[in-house]
Length: 238
Image 1 (tube, rainbow, N blue to C red):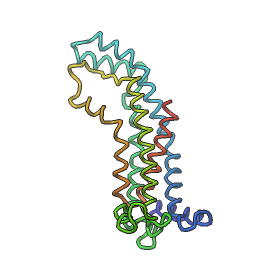
Image 2 (cartoon, rainbow, N blue to C red):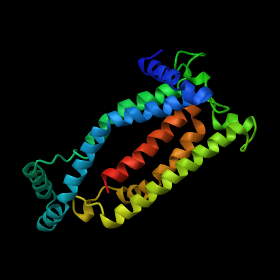
Image 3 (cartoon, rainbow, N blue to C red):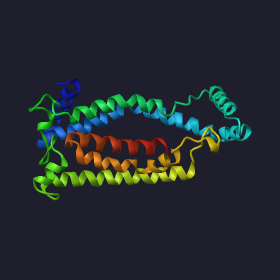
Image 4 (tube, rainbow, N blue to C red):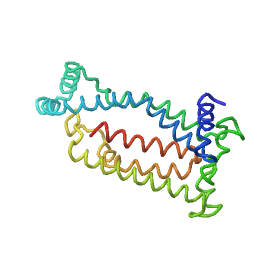
């Protein structure tokens, strides 16, 4: 049993009097939230970096006009501006990248068949009547969409759809208010960047697919982490 699995298992024991048979599921949700709370300072650092980048946008636009047609000089001027203002071009994304190992580790823990030490581990527990090692297809095969296990997934899908819609609305409003500037002339934009920008607001809806195909334990992690991210970003980037 891994250290993380042991911690979640012990947390489930503490939650047993409150959640009974669903204590392990509650422990996964709570443990995921605690990990997100621990890495919250990195999220705040990422938000500060993005705000610093946003503050430079008007000056970068001026540099684009000044050095139109000379991409080499433009890039050098942008780098000098970042150095002058002590803003790293990576300041907005580096903290987020540093969080990813923890998230991948948790996802592996809750999606691995050996999570918690095998047959008697975390995945042998249930959320109401839905086994944590089961998938949506299993729930459909045993009771159908509105069976007792199927309703667990329906609730998760509704929550994920609500979070995705919230993220979509925020992304569209942000894009409308703050069009993403590029540090290169229009004729030298990266191929396909416009398509990527148009696709980004829809990315949250792909979480629905993830929840449908992974074990329920991993789905609980994904839903908790996604919901936390939505609330966190709304607070940090308001």
